[in-house]
Image (cartoon, rainbow, N blue to C red):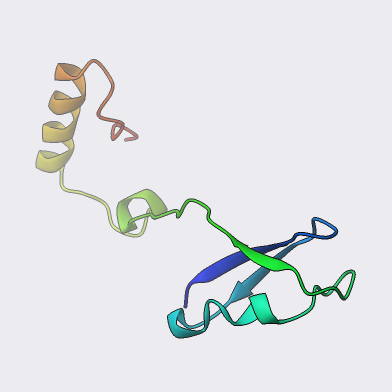
Length: 84
């Protein structure tokens, strides 16, 4: 389930909730857990993604590693993949 952040307009407390997509507006009708005032508003934040290669769960083949290294060299290190 997605994680949503809400900030209290009164005291500035940030609250993180794990909610179903259909319920993302629900906390805006609840009081702030810190000051007990109704004023929580959703804060839009960036989303982080990762993959099995970055986590080290799957190792690419040597052929694939060579392809990525060549790509990284051609892009002067900006491909951002060479970690092997």
